[in-house]
Length: 257
Image 1 (cartoon, rainbow, N blue to C red):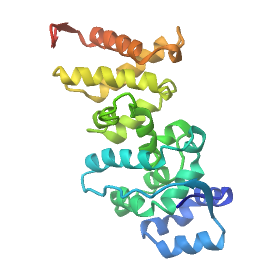
Image 2 (cartoon, helix red, strand yellow; image 1 turned 45 degrees about the vertical axis):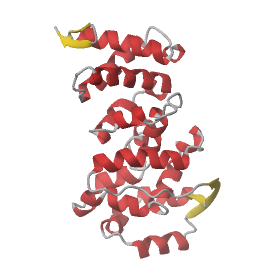
Image 3 (tube, helix red, strand yellow; image 1 turned 90 degrees about the vertical axis):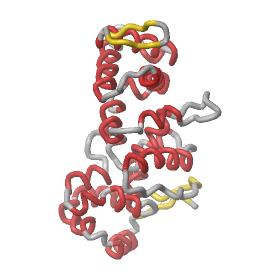
Image 4 (cartoon, rainbow, N blue to C red; image 1 turned 30 degrees about the vertical axis):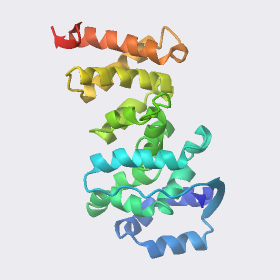
């Protein structure tokens, strides 16, 4: 099967005139969408082969988000970075080949007719970088891409499991909207630090991600972070967070001072 994407004119029309079309989203009007795309030649077929994954539709999003990150990334791992930043690709997929997933993941927003969230979930409305982690399908691929650890042959998604265990939507935006977390070495260095903390008995909260980002944002003004290895990032972040939270390591245990 080939990946489908929106024609530029169609994408612009749907984005610009969303207030006019919103009722079709609220009503899950498949007939209207199919007719609209056919009449406007709005769907184009790429040369990219893929198999549509059998996504997880669990009622608990904390379960389905974690599993769908893996399923979407596995199915589309061969995308280039340039392709994976294209709004017309992700918006095209949620309007066509992943439309059922869009209805599922936006069930509550559709019921509440939350047009603002539906719009940001289906289109890029938050700036290009942030939108990648707000869009309901793009964020699955990008979280997979940024947390996939090819060095762990037994479970390359071990960091993914940790990252997605709770607060997936909020964590995605808070953690990945920073420019420096576009570097997988930096991302993995931070996540490995927090996994070690968790395994040592520390409850990981959103603030841990926020503080790690703030620290590296400051450090990034004085050094080139992209030159650092994952291990160097891990050591730096661990040391800073210990100082910030007043934590010291004694033997194999981490205790609050």
